[in-house]
Amino acid sequence: MTAKPKVLVTREVFEDVLEYLSQYFEVTSNQSDVPMNSETLTLRLSDKEGAIITLSDRIDAVLLSRCPRLKAVCNIAVGYNNIDLEACTKAGVMATNTPGVLDDTTADFTWTLILATARRLSEAEAYLRSGQWNGWKLKQFLGLDIHHATLGILGLGRIGQVVAKRAIGFEMKVIYHDVRRATPEIEQTYRATFVTKEELLSQSDIVTIHVPYSSATHHLIGRDELEQMKQTAILINASRGGVVDDQALIESLRSGKIAGAGLDVFENEPKFNPHFLELKNVVLAPHIASSSFATRHKMAMLAAENLVAALTTGKPPNLLNPF
Ligand code: GLV
Image 1 (cartoon, rainbow, N blue to C red):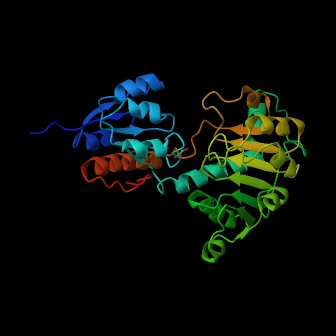
Image 2 (image 1 turned 30 degrees about the vertical axis):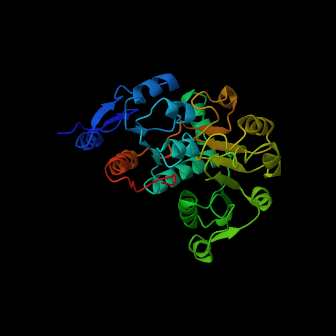
Image 3 (image 1 turned 180 degrees about the horizontal axis):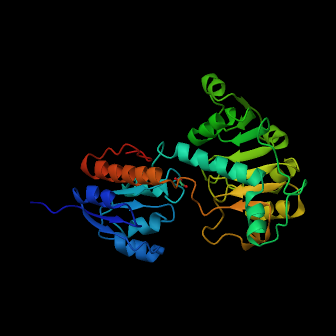
């Protein structure tokens, strides 16, 4: 009997996912969930044929050159900016992600951030918890109305579309900008009107970002873009850190150039800019937009299915690089 291929699961996953993987592989899993630095990750991967990885595991040419047996890396995430795809292709390593299974949950959380930011929930709760509340006041924590407001979606991909769908219930005007204009059918289904980036920034009451991170989207929202937004508007980011220039955002929030921000992602996670903590007009979350029980389970299982397919048939369903 030939030995099973060795694979690594870099962070804690659900037991049934490990059981599934164990049918095919000799599995080493980091169930203690301690994050690995790149040297530890490289050492642990050096004798493995495959890996289930997460968005904090960087897979680059240097690591790949030291892991000659590696054939597949399967991200538990739809975003894959942690993987150098070109280096993977050169090294003959398949890379996969988990599209589709997290769209609804991520869109739901985007709405959590929109509503909490517009209605200043974090600020109001902190006030109540601190014991300062001494009764109802007419002008207490006045916020932004969501219903009938203009929602600007940057990136009308899978997640952006679900965010737009949810806006129909709030009777909003939905505008969007994307590098590629959507088909008339998609625009009609989601009642979304294509505008330029400048029009989107200047007309929206809520700007929400749903683009992948890459060199093309680095600081897509920076000082100039924030200047173009309404003073009463809020910015929501549940896509990737780096799409927004966090320092510029902090300055805009501090000076009241925009009214607020709801953020699930940051530059240099998890060491985000500490000045965010000094601001009352932000709602902050630790990269949990896809984190429902059902969805995180689906993501982990899909990554496992990709790994099994990659190492048994060479055809994983969510292959990102050409083979
Ligand atoms: C989470 O951020 C993901 O990309 O799935």
